[in-house]
Length: 356
Image 1 (spheres, helix red, strand yellow):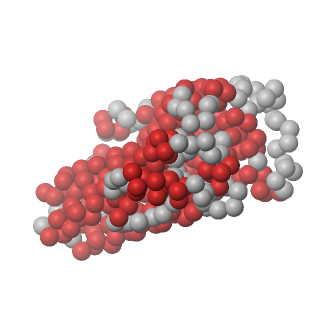
Image 2 (image 1 turned 180 degrees about the horizontal axis):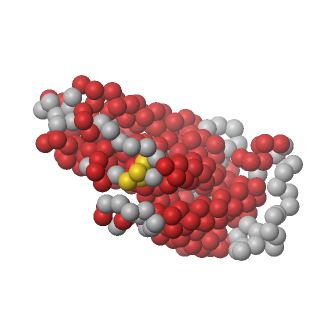
Image 3 (image 1 turned 90 degrees about the horizontal axis):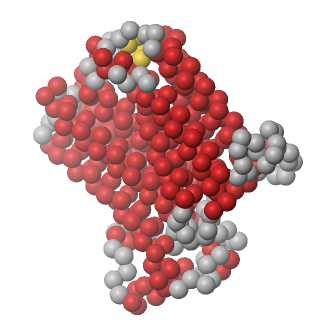
């Protein structure tokens, strides 16, 4: 992609992409707040234009509250809600959607300006359109996820759809970050190591599976299924991991199975990332590489500690209350994104083949 951009123009475009990546990180965190506060089902409609503004008067607020009172979540979980309680959860879902709209504007307006200024060559347009399509798909999946919790006896969104929404957001984040690196990092800073490059590919693949299970943990509230460490409710391998949901469904619907897999993958990733860091320190390269090759090892260490603390604090969860667990869960999610980006960085700076 670097060859498709005028060198004079690369920095503004790269900064624009990095700003977009930062906004995506904030959006994922807002999604976490929305989930942890139980706010995700408070707005029962998707109005692209009119939904930009919140209710402006008491009558509009009562209308929205009445719509929420027809949801299963209200009847089965929040039947004691006052209008003040509803306004709180409404705010977080509204702000989450508003930020998504702002991301669209931040991506679209500069893109049009850059086109007018002829900063792009024609071959750059297609990758950018893919970026916009990914963003639109993410918005559509978000609404499908919300709809999944508005009928039947559901009081939360479907965990599988939550996981899809989360992973697509991470894919959009990684794509945007890689795009920016293509424009910022000179090719002479890239290190060639066939072994390390392939190791990174495997670790990223395993990390993506782990992130999916992190979403399952959140969707099923599986931290509370085993709030102990280092054991899992007194066991190394807990009982009842298979048979409750039936076959393969246990892998995505059984809380204790999900907890066991997520915890096991965390240990595996920790050792793999630390082992790879040791290998990377044996490779000579640019100062850009040598000054950043330790990032994944640091982040994975912090992430494992946060995961343990979050599990242990899950006994303190109080519905509709923001406490210790919620803070730890949010920071855990933030470090997960930084860990992914650090691995994307290593994947970019260390190639298993030469770069033309």
